[in-house]
Length: 92
Image 1: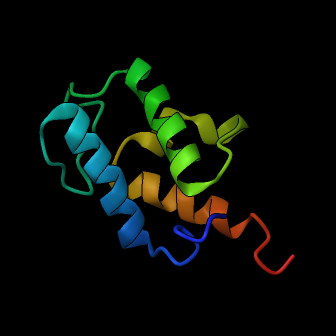
Image 2: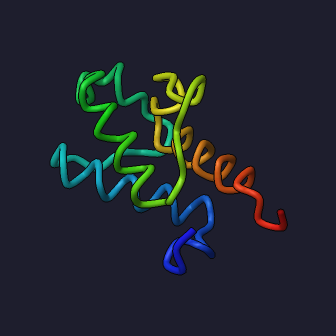
Image 3: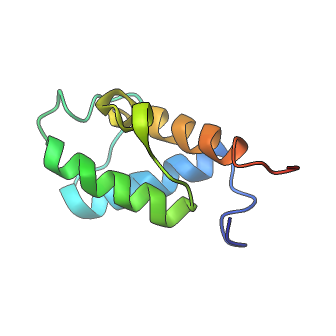
């Protein structure tokens, strides 16, 4: 984890992802809005989200974590990042 992301809270993570989405879609998003159901995010854009999440938060999204459900809302993406960062072995 880089120093700039080491101390981020779930709210900070949600905010950073929200800023990325807002820049790309020109719309602000509530944490629980289904981005895919809204029509604003396609499965192709979901791959951009994966790359953004991986590069910004220094995590690897692989296997079952690549499910669209993990990228459906800001809250779910934040939870995914938080979980992946925790399993990265901060004490390992």
